[in-house]
Amino acid sequence: MNFREFYNKNIKLAYGCTEPVAVAFAVAHAARLLGDKPIRKLVVITDRNIFKNGFGAGIPGSDGKTGNLYAASLGLFIKEPEKGFEIFSNVARDIHEKADKFLNEKRVSLLVDKEKKGIFILAKVYTYDDDYAVAEIKHEHLGLVKLILNGEIKFEAPTYEENKNNGYNSVSYFGAATVANIIDYASTISDEDLELTENVINANIKASQSGLTIPIGLGLGYSVKKLWDEGKICQCVENYIKYMVAGACDARMGGEKVGVMTLCSSGNQGIAASLPVYCFYEYNKLDDRKKLQIALAVSFMVTAYIKEKLGKLSPVCGCVSASASGATAGIAFLSGASTAEIIDSVSNLLADITGVICDGAKGSCSLKLSTACGNSVSYALLAMNRCVVDEHNGIIEERIENTIDNLRKIAQAGMSTVDDEIVKIFENKLKKGKG
Image (cartoon, rainbow, N blue to C red; front, side, top):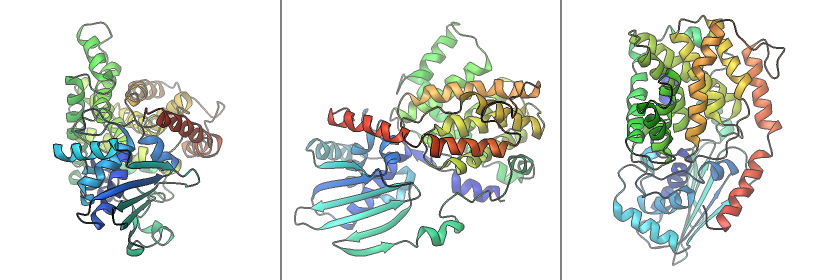
C-alpha cells in the first residue's frame, strides 16, 4: 500500500456537491464538441443515485440555486471539463445568467434510468441545425468513457473490465488488507506523505468558518455555535465537533463559493472523516502533530475501506456508516487506544447508527453529519473502557471485516428498493416544480 498514491487517487478539492459537478462535467464535454454554435436543447440521463444525490444540492455562486438541472445548464456555458471537481470555481456572473435563462426557457430535460447500476451520466446537446454531441460518464464521477459528435466517436476510453485493476475503479484498492492492517500501516507512513493530511484540514476548516459566519444552507453550524456562545448548550468536545462539521457541510450544501477536500468522491465524507479528528485534537490541546496526521490517515483509510464495500453511492448514508467510522477510529487512535480498541470503537458505531438512509445531498445532510460525528467521541471512549458491542448483538461479528460485509449486504440487497422509492418522491417533486 502507498499512502501518497491513496491520497492522490481518493482526495481532491471540489467546489460544490460532486454529483451536480459530474453532471456539469459531462455536459461541458459535450458542449465543447459543438464549439460556439447556439444550443437548442439539452437532455441529461443519469442513474438513480446521481439523480438522487444531486437533486437538492446547492450550486456555488448561483444565489441559492440547487440541483442537477441547474448544474446541467451551467455546464453548457462553462465548457471547461478539464477543471474536473473544480468546474464550479470562479464562474463568471454572465455564465450564471445564461444558464438561468436557458433553464427557465424549459430547454433542459433530466431523466433517470433506473436500470443503470453504478455511476452513469449521458449528456446530449443539440444545436438549431441538428448537430448533436454526446458525452457519457461511467463508474467514476469524472469517468469519461465516450464522446460522440454527429454519430462519430471522437473519444472512447478502454472498457471498465480491462481497467478495473489499474485504478479505473477503487473497488480493489485495499485488496485482502484487514482493518487492523490499515491501522498498523498508518504508523509506517513517511513524515512527508503524512503532511498531505494538513491540506485536507486547512481546506475543510476554511469551509467550516465560512458556514459559521453566516447562516447558509440549513444554518445548523451557525445555530449550534450561537447556542454554544450563549451558554445554552454544553461546551463539550462533542458539541464543538458538531458545529464545526455542520458549518462546513452548510457552506458546501448551501452553495457557498468555497472548496472542500473530498474523500472517495464526496465532500461531505471528506468533512466527516477529517474535522472530528482535528477538533478532538484541538479541543483537548494535544501537541503531537505527527500523531494527529497518523490519526487522520487512519480515518481516511478506514472510511475508504468501508466505502469500497458499500460502493461509491449507496442507499445508506456514507457519512454516517463510513466517514464517522473513520473519524471514530482516528479519535480512538489519538486517545491512545490499541488496534483492538480502535476496531471495537468502529463496532460500537456500526451497532448504533447503521441504516441511516441517504436521501440525497442537500442542506439537512449537516444534521446527519453532526449527529454521527459528534457521537464518534463516545464510541471511541466507550471501547477504551471495555464497553463494546460484541458478536451476540445484531449485525456485529467477531471480526470487523465480517460486520462491514453485513453492512454491505444490508445496503446492497436489503435496502435495494430504498433508492427507487426516494427517486419516485423526487420525480413527483420535479413535476411540482420543487427540484
